[in-house]
Length: 202
Image (cartoon, rainbow, N blue to C red; front, side, top):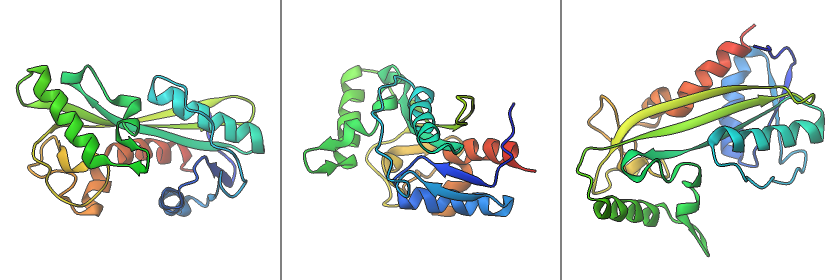
């Protein structure tokens, strides 16, 4: 595995919240972060069919454009009864002409589960894949997973996306009912970032 030895890492995102979260995580390692937005980079089209493909597209585009090592992520939920859908299309299921509506997406998901005829428990997993890419084309991949099952009706108003219908394995509460710190400690993203930090630690 190639180790990151620099002191500046570009985060391939235009999301200020995500940038702040990652900056906080990497600060103890003495790593300064910058963003795709700060460099006025366009958002590349995510044409991949897997999380790692989409994360690679974003990371390599940013690294090539700036000459800096770049970190990108792609995430979503896979539902076994729906053959792994929505997967990389998780955000697409929430798209409307006026923005993303995840209540609509969760309702659509529930209706498809009912139509599938598959009985509960409806097992699922949240996935997050981080890709750290260098300007020379090399990359390292850090996958994270949180297994669980879907519940209905929705429970809780914390978190975002599919959190109100996802109950992580070993818990009786949904991500939507969980304290933010607890969710961030056990989530798929936390799993991926633990692996990343272990690779960055020096």
